[in-house]
Image (cartoon, rainbow, N blue to C red):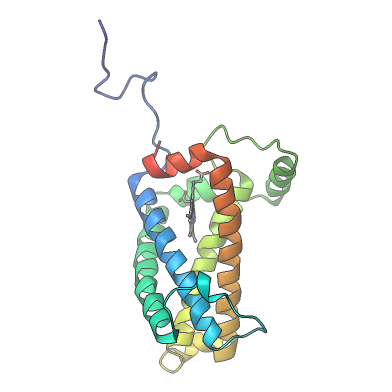
Length: 208
Ligand code: HEM
């Protein structure tokens, strides 16, 4: 007779939840909204560049400055509300403490060496290695900086104390740009890693 484990308690059949639903939902909402923010932000940058280069129009959205600003602000609300939900639950459920801490420099160096020599194990998806922990915590902090500097640029008069934190309006623009660059750098590594270890991508979709 075939037995079916409807209780989900048979250890042979049970697969532990690696990413609870709230992590997966906030992660994918964030991924779409951040891509909108980056590509519309590049269009806004092109209207008044800080450096002697422009982003190709073909990789931007919004069509023109005003259109890009509409996309940027629409996605900004999604990123901020979704980010507050993710960070609050990350702290309250203890996930950040369990999964992202501690970060020990010696472990980061050892894991980078292991990764470069192709010896970094991805067998246990339930625990992040030291480099992942550093990158995830880093991108969460970069997200906080990009939002704070963005608010400083958006309302430099009403939020002048915040703007002063970055020196001045121009300073806030540079910080905003470099925080964006850090997020794009993170994403380049993050997406390549997700494709190289497809089971990690499956876990971020199904949870298991
Ligand atoms: C198409 C884009 C993206 C893909 C394919 C992707 C894929 C993944 C995967 C597979 C994981 C799980 C990693 C593992 O279990 O080893 C993950 C986790 C994570 N991703 Fe992404 N991601 C994307 C976009 C983003 C963006 C835009 C951000 C932030 C700017 C981000 C931040 C994170 C963070 C912080 C985690 C850890 C979440 C936690 O455990 O609480 N991802 N991502």
